[in-house]
Length: 177
Image 1 (cartoon, rainbow, N blue to C red):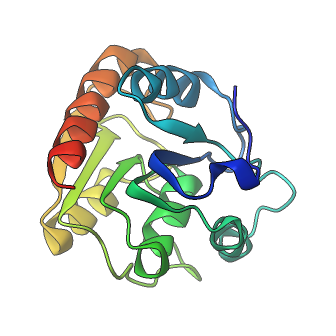
Image 2: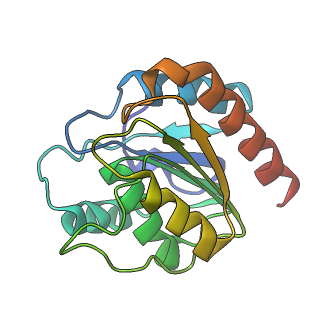
Image 3: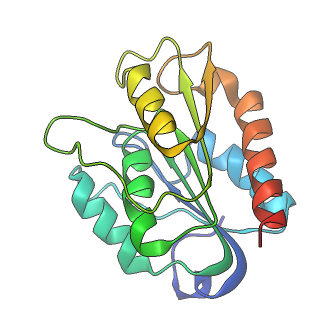
């Protein structure tokens, strides 16, 4: 597995993952989605954000990594969804894939800017941590594809669906560059 390092800069195709508050850089979802990305020839980056639970510090950490690629895809889960969405204005990714994004929480409820036209959100109907309404609001405001699945917050019981959705997004990102 590839971790964050300077070798991840200036590649042709790159997926940069941002994990959630309580998970790590190589959890179940990221590991599976990284396989999908590698099968399409993408380099994969998954920094460890666990040194802080402050979402804004995590955004700064991602920006400090300076991920660059002709086809850059940001992918985040839960708080990592917030991080990925908030980084769009500065990083200008080709595509954005969010899973149960922790958006619009008190004290970190700013509207993300610079969201790419190619954006998709997957959220669980049974999510008891981030209300599905947050995903709906983001998708509506950004004209993003919204996929609501029969799952809880971690979405781990919908890995096959997530892989299909992510693979489709990557295929469209490749066609758009």
